[in-house]
Image 1: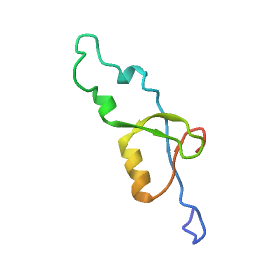
Image 2 (image 1 turned 180 degrees about the vertical axis):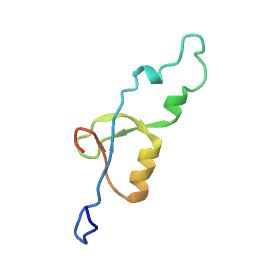
Image 3 (image 1 turned 90 degrees about the horizontal axis):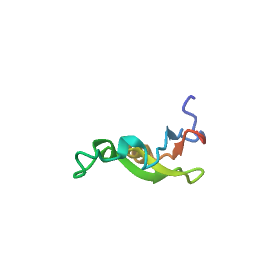
Image 4 (image 1 turned 30 degrees about the vertical axis):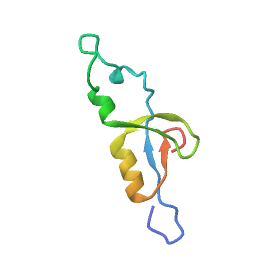
Length: 76
């Protein structure tokens, strides 16, 4: 989309993942510390439908810096 004065900036579209997804679970052999995948994600809601989940922190930062919505793949 070309930059038009009245055009709404495009939202950052991400896949929301549940906290109980296997990538976020601590392994049985090492129950201490923070799981690397969880450390790189933030819990947030879709700005359109309110779905809650884990998304890459970088995507949250991008949406904040660009001052646009962060939306799930269903809404985007």
